[in-house]
Amino acid sequence: MINQLVLVGRLTKDPELRYTNEGIPFSHVTLAVSRHYRNSDGEVEADFVNVTLWKKQAENTVSYCKKGALIGVTGKVQSRSFENQQQQRVYVTDIVADYVKFLSSKREM
Image 1 (cartoon, one colour):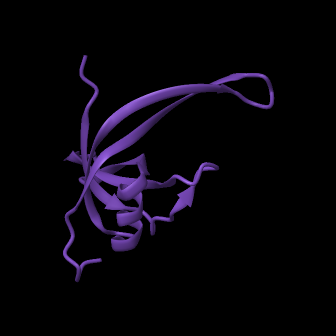
Image 2: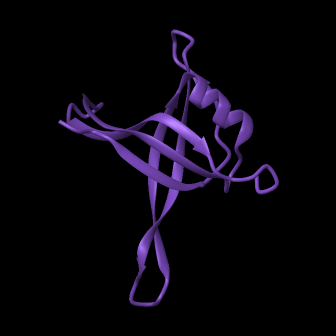
């Protein structure tokens, strides 16, 4: 089985570092990833992909990147489910980064 993806996009806001109850650092970021074609109005659309970064990847991204920074991510798709307050089963698909590469120059960030 193969579960690997590669994304290159721009951060939609400044990343923030958070911690689990066990003290593990993480960050949720959103990447704006341009599509490779134009719509009927001639505009290039983008997909907004939520990505979770863990440990050093999260710490480094928060330290060195700001909104608009171009980054590359390799990672995997994970799905999970939980029961909400209305006792309904909710399914969620997450992108979890294995590796992050900063592609903007320091002047661009």
